Image (tube, rainbow, N blue to C red; front, side, top):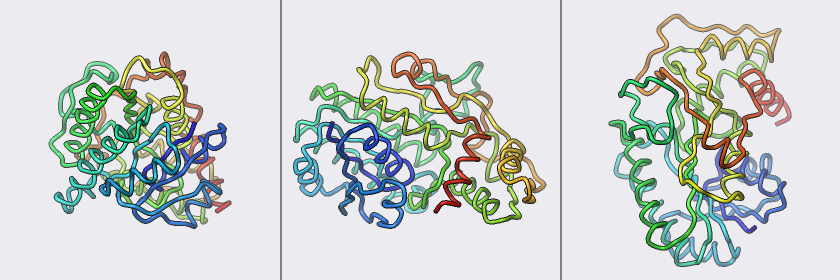
Length: 311
């Protein structure tokens, strides 16, 4: 399969490596790819510069690569959208419309979309793990943009017949540059990087909250399956179905870096958007895609530390 990936960030570059390793031909499309980061993660996968809102440029890249599938991950994340809403919503929503239009005009067979557990309305009390049918829509620009994109992509797929997979990630962590603005991912990265450098590592519970974390290598396993497998559904939760507190993250970092001082600062693990009463339900992804996370928190952080030290 020939696949074009929008976004040369954490998920995009790791997916490029995963898909190339599975024998697919991959190209990355990003407004400003970081060559050193792309090489260090994705190897020799080519990355070309282009804005996802530039329809002619995007269509040219799809056609030159003869892409049969597109994975769309280029976006602003979390508070980055709220900092400049006009720009943030333009990149996320107009960018997604442009990707969908380029895909349908170019005859792309399948479009996979990097969505988020941020589409769920976490202010609504849950009584069980969150399925893909849970109520959508928080009152944030980021959630609004992702929910809008999902609805728009469903309409495109219904009208034009291409296959659609929307992968809703839990809080992703791993070695990235976080130019897109994931506050949770950056907090996690800062803590693990501090420990990998010899510490000390101090975790602010207000930056972590009670959250479901998923290692990037599990995320790209899920996305790869969503690109390859027959689809009966269009939305899939990709996570671990385990909730963790800041103390759990600290314990896993200590296990990976036993000589380093790791502490959780005083304060409640409460911040809008970080409180989870239940994790996501992974039943659909397990049954339909064959997705099974391989990394628990300790294994993911241990591998993350090893990746940082190699880099």
